[in-house]
Length: 197
Image (cartoon, rainbow, N blue to C red; front, side, top):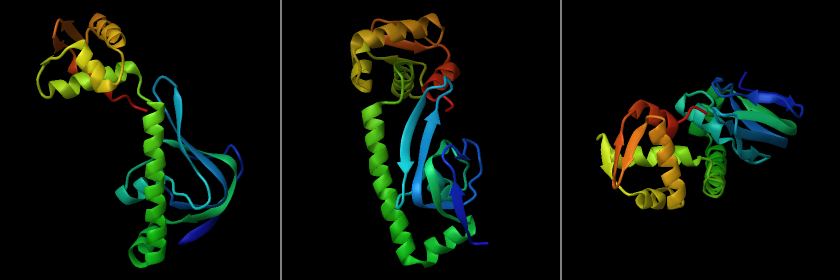
C-alpha cells in the first residue's frame, strides 16, 4: 500500500532513536514534537511538525536510508497520511509539485533548526571544550593554545574554560600547562565531545 491514513492521540510515540522509518508523515491536523535526549537525560526540543511542515528526522532517514536519531511524540492529536518509503521516492522523482513542496518545507525547517541551535546552545561547556581541544589538536596529541583562545573558540568566559580544563585534567583526559594542552585520553575526550544522544 503506497499511503495509509494516520491517526494518533496525544502522547503517542511515533518514533524513537534507533527506529527504522516506516514512511513519510504528512500532518493534516495536530502537532508532533521532535526532541533529543542526552546520555545524562537532558532533553531539548528540536522542532515541532505541524500541517504543511516536514520532519527533518524522517526526511533524512528516507533520503539516506538511516534510522531515527531523535524521538517524535504526538503533542496534540494528529491526523494525516503515512506515505510508504517506496511511494515517497517515486513522488520525489516523478511529481514536481510534491518535490517542490517537500524541499521548500525542508528549507524552512533548516532555518528554524539553525535558530534553535544558535539560541539554545545545546552542548554543555565540557562538551564544547573537549570538541575545541580535539579540533585544534587535529591528529596531534598536543596543541599550543591559551585558555583565552579556547574561550573565544566556543564563546565562553576564560574563567569557565579554565575551570573546565582543570576538571578534564583531574579526570585524566588531558594535561593543561601554560599555553600547552596535551591530550592524554583521546578516546575519552572524543566521547565527551561527541556524546551519544
